[in-house]
Length: 273
Length: 302
Image (cartoon, rainbow over all chains, first blue to last red; front, side, top):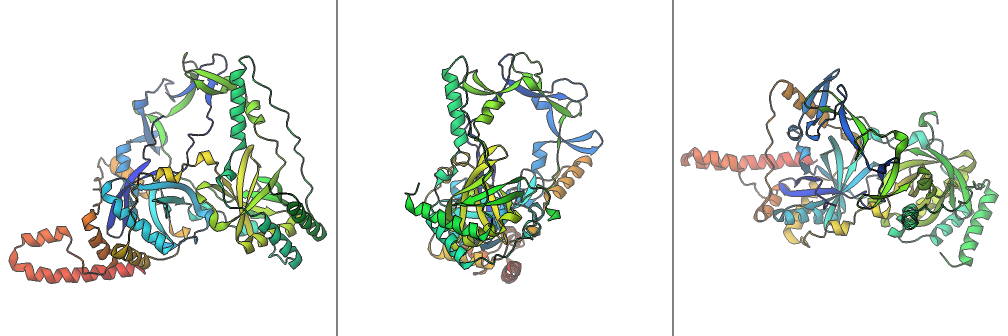
């Protein structure tokens, strides 16, 4: 596989300080168990190709172009190079407009993380100045950036020697929480229940650990593939699954009290998992 | 809650021995964007996708398309949809809280999509208790369940009067930050440079409001399309001037508006061309411009 090429190249700018940077997505599909589509009848790979909608003839890759529909079935071909001449500053430059205290941006606005690094030796120091000052002041930077033919607000947060750039959702891309939470009570919780639930939380608190984001299904798929590889004839039968039974919920206060007490006893009795 | 629309998922949240019925609603939507169509440059017609056998070149019917895992060159293990589905545990529709984590401790890099997590009438009390308990202890909960036929880990955190459940990406779906940044030299900035940069941050401090940001790309693209239809080409923008290491301190000073700014190059050369006689006048103008630009900067920042 090809080494990860920079997904975006441009400049990071703070007032009169500018440095060349490159960026790549922080997420990747590369390690996922990937499947190809096969033709069951021939066992050959299935590939997709483009055909002309009118003539039905195959279209060569170099003839595939981006078309802007200016009328019905009337397309203006726009070349990639032409797209690059779009006049927005934010197409090439992350110009930090303002700084806000860290953690004041609700998580719900965070859309997609990217890793930003200096791309040339000339900018190492300038990059470090911007990063270290944000770190020292406990702030994140806010800017605009064109990615995937959209201009979005982005948040810049120092992360070790680099900077994480989060694209942020537009105002109308987050649904109004009032519409969902409007009917929820403010919580006149019984103090006894509160003290039980806080004890439960304390008991079950753990430090963050990447093991918490392991995927049991991926492991299982790998096992299935492995067993199929071994048995040339037929794949091992998947094991019988447990019945998915819906639990009974904890209804009233008395239930809640005894359930919370049970949780605490259960936990302190045995060793933690 | 008529406005809320239909729940994406209905089930239960379980912490300790307490179980409460809840529902999940997508918290986000994707707004429209300009789309291009793929066209055939030769004919100007639109194109459509066709799935063909790589060896025979013949179209493959939908029901003949199966998933294959590549062992090595051109050898595949075929997995039927039922087999793939069997790898996902049966859903008991329960978000089981496995641990509570201090909010400051959470690595946001794993965040995928947020959902509003709402209580069912029958579980309102237990829900409020969990919400207020987590709020008080400044923690979020890690839970796992089968969502939309996929095993997912979610992070549940308080949000206003409710809870937000954010799906998390798995470890193998996130690149290591350490790895990504390993080529960056270890430079720690101290002294005047750091102080100046902190000062600039102070000038530009504000608050974030998502509503202030709109997509200006569409307008810019429309301009580009119009220019093309008129047979014109838009001028290419020159790349910005990169601050060289030996100019960095001066650039920071100017940005902070601390020292009188040096003359921008363009104007400096023009002044030079005009001859020496005007040197004194130009110097005065210089000071004026610098004062003006510093003031403008302060205005912009506030």
